[in-house]
Length: 436
Image 1 (cartoon, rainbow, N blue to C red):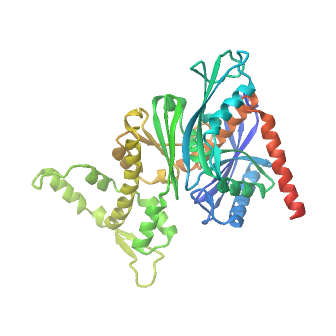
Image 2 (cartoon, one colour):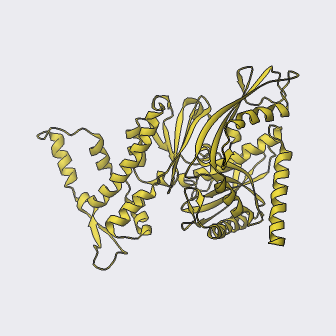
């Protein structure tokens, strides 16, 4: 097990904010938040990829300093969430006979290497979370194989192949602040770790991280990660439609999206078969459409000269609903095409900033045909101001870090490897400061 009282830090390079969280595992096993920092990304990160290295380093520095100030902790290493525009998700096995009949550290490493050998590609970094590694001895699944008797050891490991340049540039942002990346985790897995319970994973569940510039998804069943995916679109498309149609800045469009969200009436109208024209239901529907709420004006503040300063509520509702429906239909089609729909006893869980859009759960659940709920942070004691879906992936990065520390503490991961890695990265950083 990991050390009680140890401190873990995580960073999420998001399209809207770069966030840093510091947490501590207490003696009773509970995890307490010590500090938090955030800074607006301002376009320096899109779909997990650094767009401007200098700007990204500056944003990370601000978030890091806030986290250090609020926690009173000097952060020397972080666990980093990683996403990218192109990601290939794989699950691979590594099998080997156990010489001597007892599993040791070398057996574990060799099984991992066998699995990783078929998951490499030129120019790509292979990411694997300790939480997505399964172990079997003689075809029986075990949580911790080290020192157990066995004749055959099998590792079943999930890999996410992301462009190497994406990981390298994230590391540069961190190392510029005299800090190192202790380990990385693929963001859809982090989002799932941030909100799921062991029961969720065992019964079957899908998690969709509704980010600003990308959406990530992870599916679990029987306690296993069965698939992940990153979609090349994000919830900012709704904001863009509002800004374009109503001639308002992006910030005001984002505020309108948060304030009004998806129209419940339009969701019901879209999902309910049209009634007969002379039925009572038709009269009720007509009354709703013509209601005062639909025609109430929505004030627009920062518009160009000559542009409208208000629009009917119904116009804004239709703009938001049209794009929101399109995006949730893509998500629903992915769930159905991969055969997940009938395997999700715990349904669909929405996290990320997009999960805070009013009525998004209602629309996604109806289109996907499963029960849907929001994914609030689990496993870290969060203050009310941060206890929302937007911070769930960051909490998942912390939970990944704690499991990584558990694995090094038990010997399942050779801690000397991580120590050497951190030493080499520090030497490279110091050399760069002295000679370049």
